[in-house]
Length: 117
Image (cartoon, rainbow, N blue to C red; front, side):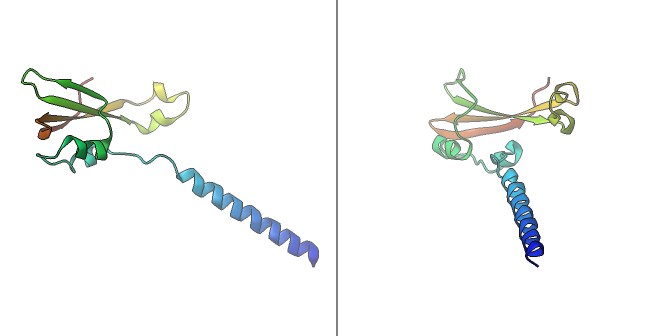
């Protein structure tokens, strides 16, 4: 009887351990979706509101009118491109971009687009 109880407890521990490991593999950095997040932005919001939502911009510039433009980019990889070592040869990668234009610290224009490659 003792051998059977030890075997059952060992198998139970292995199953619990595998379950815990499988759950921990799901806990990575949260994935953002630029197109969905762009829909949360409203004209008139401040730069601090955008910083809370997206963090610092990937690029920024001041245009000829003196307005500040912030740019956020996201790479959208095809399923096949996620294969280690081979992915760079398979499928196509698409870059999504979000432009936010500020005047006096408030949003006056929002543009989501996919730049042509």
